Structures are given as structure tokens and as C-alpha cells.
Image (tube, rainbow, N blue to C red; front, side, top):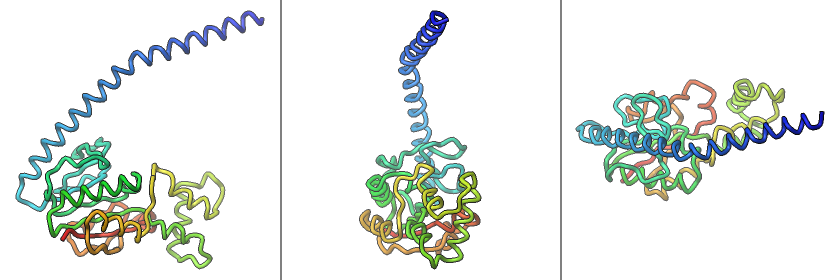
Length: 246
């Protein structure tokens, strides 16, 4: 019996080694396919960007578009899986000339990269923005999240607690604030901003006069009606700041 068990164990071990060696052999092929795919994405993006920037209309850059493809905007995302989205890594130099865009919009994206990467992104936004242009950043609000611990939390915060438990953490069987707060650190979030920290970052990048607004609020018509989360619970946690380039 023991000999049979050892034989089966050896077969399984041998199969595992073969699978490992097979994966090692095909890894260069996988890397090559990925590189070819990335080159193709960059080629398509650069051609589309040249065509877009050649138009005399208002130029608008949408960073981290995901499935929200905005008409009249140049929609960019690191995973451009939807038609009308083009590959761009916001942690690298932007593939656009200086002073290319009038408006830049990014909703719930900057929290997915680290703080210094966020500073780089905003500096690149400043570089590619025309003088007089405006940037609008929407992101989770750390001050709002921390305020969930207050015994005097607002009706808005109480609604947020219930919504997070219902949407994401119902399986925990708990309604503790700690469960709700920890939820914000899921979804690949790297750095959560409050209004002071994000305003400072925008100013370090060169932008002026950062203004805190509501998710559906803007004096700029092109920013109206484009926020995805205006009608759901995520709007409760959302910090929106607009700033300009002098």
C-alpha cells in the first residue's frame, strides 16, 4: 500500500515539474505577445491622438475612462478594453505635446496610484494643458471616511455606512464602522486623499485656485453630467476639486 502511495506521489510530482517547465518555456512567447499587443495599442493611440488634436474644437482629455467613453473627449485608460478608449499609463510621460488640452477630467482614478505617481500625473496634466484650462479630479474623500467614527456623524455618513454594508460587506454579518472604513482600501486603492492633501498636490504640480465642488457641480458646461457616480452611494464619499492653469 505504501509503495503504491509513493508511486502516485512521484507521478504527481513529475507532472508538476513538467507543467512548471512547460510554463517556463512558453513565458517568452507570452511576453512577446504582450509586447506586440502593447505596441499596437500605442500605435493606435498615437494615430487617434494626432487626429483628435488636429481638430479645431475644444480639446478634452479623460484619464482613467474605464467603460465611460465620453463623446468629444480623448478617452484614455491603462486597460483600454472598450471601444473608443486608448492605452495610456498615467504614471509615465504623457504622449501629447505641451499645451494640447483645454480640459482634463479624471474620476476615481488617482487613488489607484501611489502619491508620488499622482504628483507626476498632475505635473503631466499641467504640461499638456493650455493656459486658462481647467482640471477636474474626483476621488474618495479621506476626511469623510475618517468622520465615520464621529459620534455625531451626519445623515449622509449614516447612509454611506448602510450602503457599503449592503453593496459590498453584507457577507461579513457586521455593521461596525471598521468594516466600512476598511472597504475603501479594497479595489486596488493606493492613496486616499482629503481636500487639503489633493489641493496641495495640485498646487505643487503648478495649478492655481483649487476649489472643492459637489460631484454634480461645475461652472464649466463640459463637466456637467459626465460623473458616473452622481446618483449612487459612491457620490457620498467623493471629493471633487477643480483647479486651473494660469
